[in-house]
Image 1 (cartoon, rainbow, N blue to C red):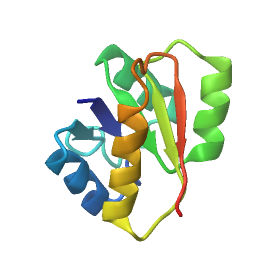
Image 2: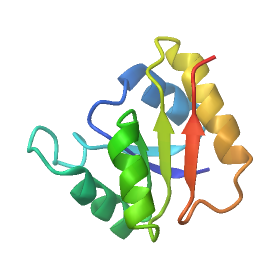
Image 3: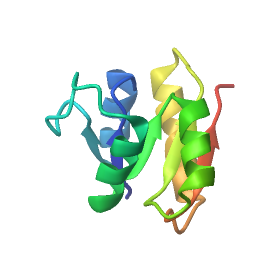
Image 4: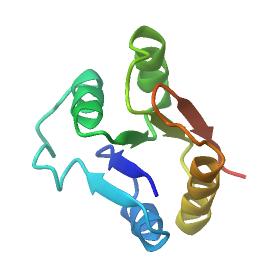
Length: 111
């Protein structure tokens, strides 16, 4: 299963479901970096150093970071979706279909 670093704005119910599915998910808040105004670049650096794929709703900034800094442990960008369980299931399926996450950008959209 994947090692994931969930960005500060990612919905907790989706994170809980990803954990139920067996993923190792660490949130920004759990890492002690919550509400400290870390830049997206700093979030990506922390995740990469810890071998975790970033999970975020902040598509615009992380798409740019992926383009500018393609050497990372992976980025999953999602659209806002109130079907948290369905969103987590789609993330899980995308992860299962991607054998190597390093330097990969996965897009997971709502249905």
